[in-house]
Image (tube, rainbow, N blue to C red):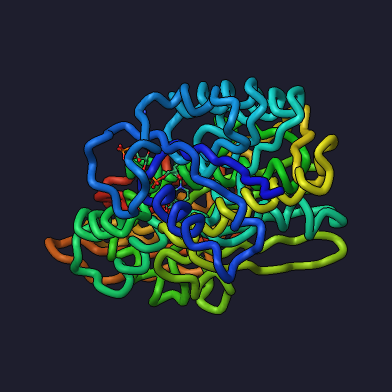
Length: 431
Ligand code: NDP
Ligand code: HSE
C-alpha cells in the first residue's frame, strides 16, 4: 500500500519556495521524497502572486488549522520572527507533529521550552537550516563529530554581512545601503536586516552551535555581540595594508578550567587563514575537537536553494527514522541538554586590537599615546601614522594580546588627550 507523508509548510517566502520546488521535483533525489505531499501551506497574504504553482486550495491564512490538522505528519516552520512562530511550533508539538524549522531566532530564545515539549511528546525538532544555510553543521556537531571533545567553533555564519564586507572590500565607493539592498533582493537578509547587520542573527546561530558543541544551553544575553555598522571602507583598506581581511566572526571557545567564551564581532583575520578567503554569501565554520583536530566546512550560507536543501534533508531524516523505528526517537537527532552554561563576560577576555585614531597633527602625539598605552600594560605591535585631511593625522595601532579591561582603561585616558580628535575604530584580531 502506498503511504504518503503529509507536510504542512508555514511560510512560502524565499525558503518556503525553495522547499516546495524540491518537493515538487523529487525525481533523482532521495526516494522517500516521492512519498511526501505538500498538504497545506500557511501564509499571510492569500492574494500574493507565488513563484510556484500549487493548487490554490492548499493555501490558508489560518495557520492554527495546519498545526492542529490530524492528517499532517510534519510541520515545516519558515515564517521567521518569534511570534506566531513560537506558539505555532508549540501547538504543533502538542498535536504530535514533528517540526522542521529554519528559525534560529526562535530556537536561540525559546529552544528550552520547544525541546522540552518535543521530548515529552516524542517528536523531532530539526533545525539544520537554522545555521549556515547549506552547510550541514548541525548534523556534523550532533552526529559526525560526536566522539570528540569540542573546544572551539569559529565561523562566518551570517551570509548578509559577509556579502556586505566582501563588496566593501572590492568596491570601496559603494554605499552600505546600496549593498544591503542587493543582499535583501537576493533573499539573504532577514525580514528586518538589523538582525544581520547588528550581529543578532550570528549571535542566535553561535548560541545554537555552542550549545550543541559544548553540551549545555546558552543564554543569549551572555553572548558578547557587535555588528558591522561601524566598520568603514577605510578600516577595510587599512586592514588589507596590514595583511588582514575584516570578517564578522562568531567565536565559541571552551577553555579548560576557564569556562566558555562566546562572542560575535567584526574581526581582523590574517589573509592566509582559511576564513579570510570566504567571500560573498558563503559561510565557513572551523571546529576544533579532540582527537580530530581542526576541521573546516564551507558553503552557501543563505538563499533559497542552500537553505531549502537543509530543510528537505531534515524532512527526509525524520521520515526515514520514523519509518525505521516508529516507536522510538533516534537519540542522535534529538536534543537532551538540560543545564545552562555560564559564559565569561567580555571584560574577562584578552585579545589583540586594531585601533584607528584621529589626532591633531602636532608634536608629541605619538609619545602621548605610547605613554597612555604603556601605563595600562597595553603592549604595541605596530603603530603607523598616516596623513589625513584638515590638519588631522590618522594613527593606526595594533596591540599585542592584552586584556579587555586594560585596553578600555588606556582608551578612556587617550580620549582625554588634548591632541586626540576621535577614535573611529576599535576592532579585534583573530586569536
Ligand atoms: P520570507 O520573509 O521570505 O518569507 C516568510 C513567509 O512567511 C512568507 O510567505 C509570509 O507570508 C509568511 N509569514 C510570515 N509571518 C506570517 C504570519 N504571521 N502569518 C502567516 N504567514 C506569515 O522569509 P524567508 O523565507 O527568508 O525566511 C524564513 C525563515 O528561514 C526565517 O526564520 C529565516 O531566518 C530563516 N532562514 C532564511 C534564510 C534565507 O536565506 N532567506 C536562510 C536560513 C534561514 P506572505 O508570503 O503571505 O507574506
Ligand atoms: N539572514 C541570514 C544570513 C540568513 O544572511 O545569514 C541565513 O540564516
